[in-house]
Image (tube, rainbow, N blue to C red; front, side, top):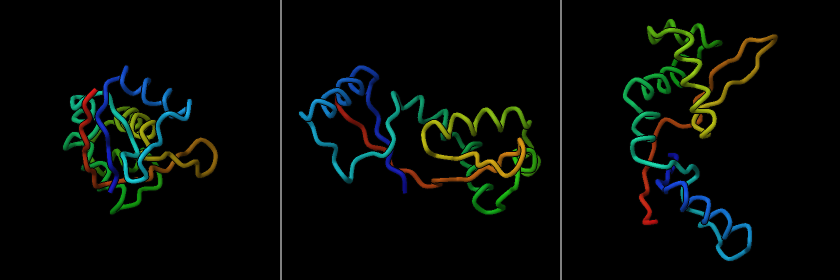
Length: 117
């Protein structure tokens, strides 16, 4: 299960600076990923995108094109979504020869943690 924290951009920057200065220790059980708002989480983890992750996990497609066919979505849309997910560590695009990339789901279950900032 991946823990996602919700923290405003300013609070996120302040937190990271405090960690860098040694003023704050990140909690070992704290969120692995930080997002700026619930809206951002809702967009990235929409029902369609959770289906995408489950399909990757269950069917193990060898390419983005194969995944797009399995979920009946345009390849360009699936590619864009996976690139966004990979920036947050939710998915990975693993090179498998040449220019082909295999989608890997790094998380399919999530827990949200809201922080005051």
